[in-house]
Image (tube, helix red, strand yellow):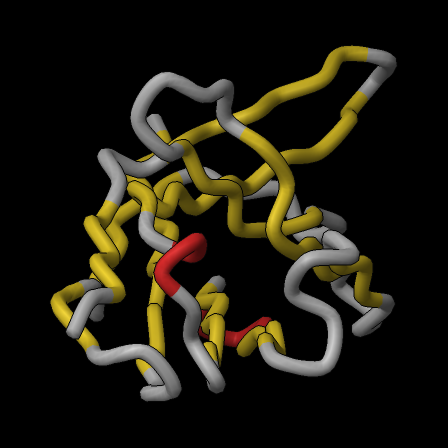
Length: 119
């Protein structure tokens, strides 16, 4: 079983910063990908940023230059540094860890952490 736990959400003013963290535990395949997704009210969950084990990153266009994803392979942890936050960044942020083993994919999600950007 795999558990994924996020932390670090909260209320921040426009232009401010927040750092989200996520810890995965349990039986985890070494060659995994991790990432952050978000879901605003009335919208579908969408990509924020992903990172592979070797550090290759991918960002949504809306967060490029403002958000930075990083990971700690030893701890199966992933972080999201969010700077220059905008009201439109308000959403529930979800952490994901995933891998493919023997042709079978696995994907696990956290419970989400709320980020509110408002003055």
